[in-house]
Structure formats: C-alpha cells, structure tokens
Image 1 (tube, rainbow, N blue to C red):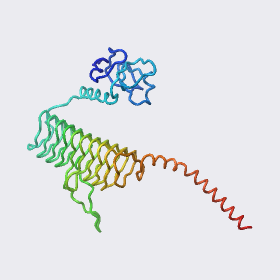
Image 2: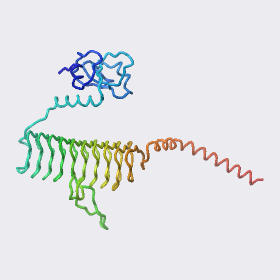
Image 3: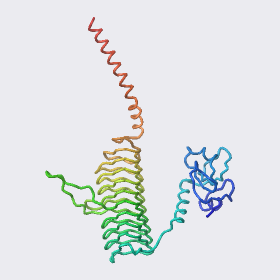
Length: 348
C-alpha cells in the first residue's frame, strides 16, 4: 500500500520539504535507499548519504538544514528516530496483525482464566489457575505455569516460559527462549558439596516490560524479583534472585546482575557488563560496555571499566595503559643509566 509524503507528515505532525505527493510503500536504511522507500536521518555521521540516497522520502529532525539540494522529499519532525518507530509499529501491525482463538492443539487447564480475544497457539500450555488477560498473544510451545498471571495485550513468543506463580503486567513482551521465574542460584556449601536452597518467592514484570531471546529473570529466594515498568532487556541478559531493576532502565546483551542488587531508574547498561550482588546502583547511571560494578554506585554518572570508574578517568587510564610498553622501555633505559653512573662513582 502506498502512502504519500503529505499523509505521513500529517500523521507525524511534520513538515514536507519537496514533493508532498511522493509515494512510498517500504522502508530502507538511508545508505541502501531505493525508489519507493522511506528512510531516516538522525545520526549526523550519515548526513552525506542524504544527498546520494535513492529513497523517495527521508525523515529528518526539525532543526536539520540540508547543505545542498536532495532528490528525496524530506519530512521534518521533532525526532526522526522516534517518528520512524511509530511508522514501523503501524507497518508491523499491518503485516502481522493480532490473532485470536485457542488452537485445539493447545493444552489449557479447565481452571485457567482466559480473557477476551486471546490467542493461544498450537502446543502452548496453560496450567491450572493461570490467568491470561485480554488481547494477549501466546504462541506455539509457550508455557504459563500454575497460578501465573499474565496481563492484557502481552506477547509470549514461541518457547517463552513463565514459571508457576509469577506475574506479568500489561503490554509485556517475552521473546523466544526467555524465562521468567526459574530458580535463583541458591546453594549452601556443606562438607559434601552444595545443598539447594529452595527458591519460594516469585518473579514479577511490571507494565510495558520487554525481555529478549534467552533472557532469564530468576524467582526470588523469598519475596519477589521485580523488573519495574518500562524496562527493556536485550537478548541473553541474566537478572538474579531478589534483584530490583528500576523503571525505564535498559540493559544490553550478555549483561548480568547478581542477587539482591537494586538498580535505579533510567539506567543504561552496556553489553557484557556485570554488577555484583547486594549493592545499590543509583538512578541515571550509564555503564559502558564490559563494565564491572563491585560496590554501591551513586546516581547521575557515566562509568566504565573493571572495576568501574568515572568514564573520563577510565579514558585517561586507557591512554596511560597504551603507553605502558614505551614507559617500560624508558624505565629500563633509565635504570641502565643509573647503574652506569653508580659504577663510575664507585670507581672514583
């Protein structure tokens, strides 16, 4: 289906620069643009592509001023990246609309409570006492355990697992292979090995949480592990028992948070980062990739490195680290000079 620049601008409250009748029916990266596609420019590093792209329409920020004429029609919006997300959401809903109905191949317990317009795919399992909210989509081979509660407008993709008693709020998304409520890593050392400590708490996702493929949110030893409203977890993230992740925090792939740690709101945690257990990380703390946090960390700062330090200090340390081989050579040369001077003095 074709859309004109005028229609798109009206939907996004944007302003057209160029042909308002230009039409598009697909999306493309600005560097791979083609006729009939819409692209976006939000990162200045890609600005040169604006003048060579073959895309018919390009979204740009409202304060962007082109340096020369473009063949593409531009639509100025408040935030090009956010506007693209809105368009992609519409496109996604059009090509993969919500489904309804319960497959005869699904296993749904008689005592389970199923809301309106729910979809449950083949070989999905809903156990006794589970509750599924309105408009929720549960795909093939997903599992919802005994007494678990899933809110409205959630999506559980194939092979997503919610263990017994755990809770998902509204508009949550679990991607394939993700697990909410597996046992926390609790073992008591004994002379004969490690005895398992039963994990009798639950795990809870509040509203608007999304967790990526093969990500795990463990149930608590007692009480609950909580992922607060608006949190986004990438693929292969580990949230351990009794952790609390604050609202609107985002965590990139292969990161882990150890047990009983509390992470604040609006934090950004880079890939392959690790946070030790039983500490507090304040609000709006940004971790560069591969950061290791070993102690309480106050809010409103950027940190990096292992153990973590303020990011500017880490950058200065990195420069010094790269200089170590040359510094070593200089020190050895100085040592030789000192030894030579000592021996001359002794000869006198």
